[in-house]
Amino acid sequence: MTLPRRAEAPAALALPETEAKREFAFSDADFRKLAELAYRHTGISLSASKRDLVYNRLSRRLRALELTTFREYHEYLEGPQGHQETERFINSVSTNHTRFFRESHHFVHFRTHVAARFAHTNHGSGGGRLRIWSAGCSTGEEPYTIAMVLKKEIAAVARHNVRILATDIDTEVLAKSQRGEYAASSLQEIPPEYRDFFAAKPRASGGEAVVVDDALRSLITFRQLNLIEPQWPMKGPFDAVFCRNVMIYFDNPTKKDLVERLTKLVRSGGWLYIGHSESLIGTHPGLELVGRTIYRREP
Ligand SMILES: C[S@@+](CC[C@H](N)C(=O)[O-])C[C@H]1O[C@@H](n2cnc3c(N)ncnc32)[C@H](O)[C@@H]1O
Image (cartoon, rainbow, N blue to C red):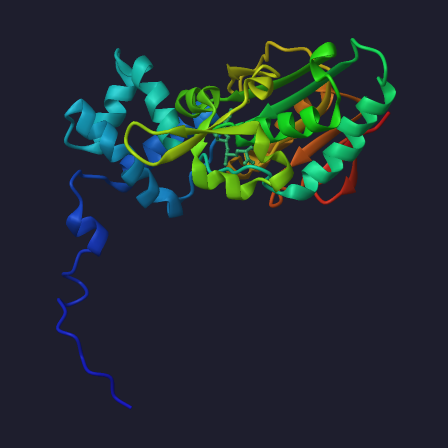
């Protein structure tokens, strides 16, 4: 069968559709420069397949700064005013997709091995210490999920020394985490027995949002932290660390280094949860794989 021919410009003359429609000049060299800056500031490794994504996410920055080419943008970033813009650049290149109870098998494990065990050990007494870290917490669904499980499992959790540290490099998502306000449709991600931790809140713009209970919020400390910084301010040890769907954006040396540093902050016998597509490469001294993407720090 012969297919009808479409009237087209000869291939050699036609620009790729995306290039033809582009508002800002964006060369391969510009992409390479921005990818290098992203890597230097965040550890995020942007392959050539992310070119369009970078263009789309940064275009609004060019408009805001009234620049007309990406070359001007990276020159601006490296110039005297670049420091302030770097934060916005980082916020734009980070990918923040998340949801409540994401990879729910982690929370089944966490409920049994961390929350219920703590409740059992500290039954009838106050003051038990428990430390959890959500590293790369994005808009907060992960630390609030951890808080829901702890609150449900541990009676009078406030009588104990229970804290969740939630960190991210991206200041915009951290601000959203702290607000604890989500689209009402997010409740669908949450098992019914946990939905009481949210209250409906009408939105000024119409529609309805939900806000998290203060009892959850008060368990969490939100902080900006770049995981590739050579020094972290906290000393640990943590009973469990969630670092999920963060390393997926890092190259192998960055990933290996991060896992080693995280491992040192997990207490002996504690847990490290990583994302489903981030299985650790090679062996990591001190870590034992005990379940799907669940590691135990060897005693
Ligand atoms: C895809 S989200 C994962 C959120 C959550 N952990 C989950 O699994 O649903 C990845 C988060 O890692 C953060 N991130 C990327 N590079 C980082 C770095 N160098 N230091 C700290 N956070 C980083 C991003 O800002 C983003 O919010």
